[in-house]
Amino acid sequence: MEIAMTVNALFDDNWAKSVKDAQSSWVSDVLRDINGPGGTYLKCISEWFSELPGSNKQKNHLKASLKSTDNAAHLGAVNELSWWKFLTSRGFTLEPIPTGKLKTPDFVLKYEDYCVIFEVTTLNPSKDECCKEINYSQEKSLNRIIAKAFEEKLDQLKYGHQKRSPSVLVLYNYDEWTAPCVRIVVA
Image 1 (spheres, rainbow, N blue to C red):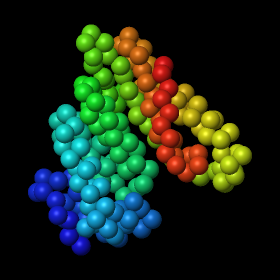
Image 2 (cartoon, rainbow, N blue to C red):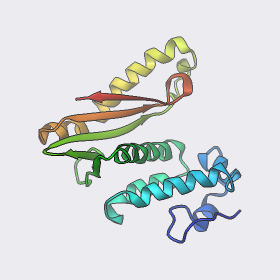
Image 3 (cartoon, helix red, strand yellow):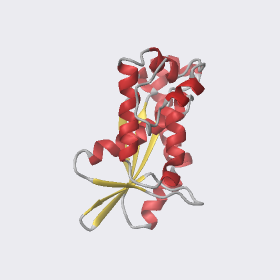
Image 4 (cartoon, rainbow, N blue to C red):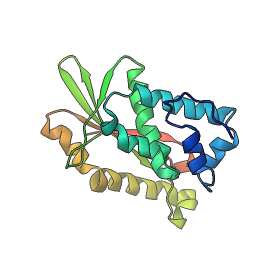
C-alpha cells in the first residue's frame, strides 16, 4: 500500500505502516481506498493542518489526535480542524489558543476590536444500550449535551468570561440518528 503524499505530509508511508493492522478504526476504511477517496481525505486533512497557525509544539496534541487510530480522538480532532477551516475560509481570523496548565478553549476569532472564544467538541454515539431506541436517544442526547457543557467544558467556557469575550461551544453531535448535526451554544 502506497500513499502518494508530499515528504512533509501528516500521513506518510511511516504512518501507513504503523497503522496498517488497525481493526475497527477509521484507518482501515481510508487505507482500503487509499488511491481514491481515502487518499483524498488524508490529503485534505494534511493540507488543512499545514495551514493551521501555531508552532509544531502548539499543534502536537492535535497532530497526535488526527493520526490516532482511535475513532473518537480522530473525529474530535477533524471536527476541530474543520471548524477552523470553515471560519477562515469565510475570511475570519481564527487563531488557536495556546494550551497551558489550565483547560483552555480551542480558538479565538478576532474581528475589529472584538473577540469570540470557541470550544469545539464532539458528542460521539452513546455506548448506552438504551440509545439504540430512538425514543430514548433524544432524551439521552439532551442529557449528554448538558453534561458535556457543564461537566466537561465549563472551564473552557469560563475562559471567555474571564477575558470578557463571548464563548461559543460548538458541538458536533453524532449521537442522534447516527448522523452529524452541529449545535452551537453561546455562553
